Image 1: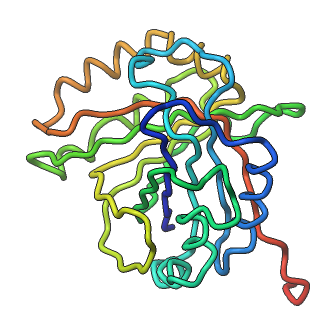
Image 2 (image 1 turned 90 degrees about the vertical axis):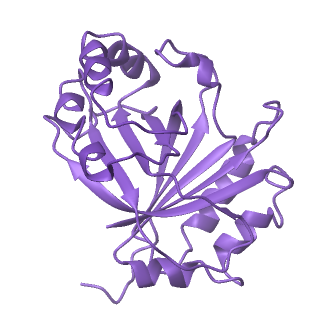
Amino acid sequence: MISLFMTFSDPSGERWIRSDEVVAVAGLVGSIPGMTEGLLFTPLQQSVDHPYKADGSGPVLALQLRFPDLLICEAAMDRGGVLASLATGAGLSGLAGLYVTHQVMVTRSFPVDVAEHPAGTTTPCSYLVHYPGPAEDMNAWNLHHPAIMRTFPDVRQIEIYTRIDWVHRLPSQRVEHMQRNKLVFDSPQALAHALGSDVIKRMRADFVKFPPFSGGNKHFPMLTRAVRPPRDPRAR
């Protein structure tokens, strides 16, 4: 599985995207050819406790778009497509003038004990982490953390994303982060509870064993909205 990440950031940290524009972006994302699922990430309206609050509130908007293979993803990144329009903020004043980056990565999914959100959950929350890199030993780097992540209380999804070569024609800024991670929980409160558990101590103990790397890291809790393209009526 291939994931395309796009982030829309305001260097001043003062802007927010309105709820009606989130709906508009969701409609556009749902029309992207070949996409199997789109995830829209927006900042939390209220702060929650987590170990890396000093990293800030994160981007105004972030997208994770899933594609079944690289060629389909690359086709969606043509200069005349939906993604190019989103990158320039065409027709969406809330996106105009934001700093937009994108990156295509391989998706690595890891098992969790319970993947389904319970009935009535309306505020799924993702913990998005990225490491710009590079690391001295990428193979050793990518062997760390997943088994410990699984022990977070009530974690619903664990994914790690690693680099890949790709081509594009988007007007946004291409980035080459060496790794991204995502943990998904039922709510911001569930995320705060998990990250306040003793598991975070084990994560930190493992972290000091990582190969030397540069670029630091960033951690952002984000509300999460899933978008799926309309089902083809010809499909059976």
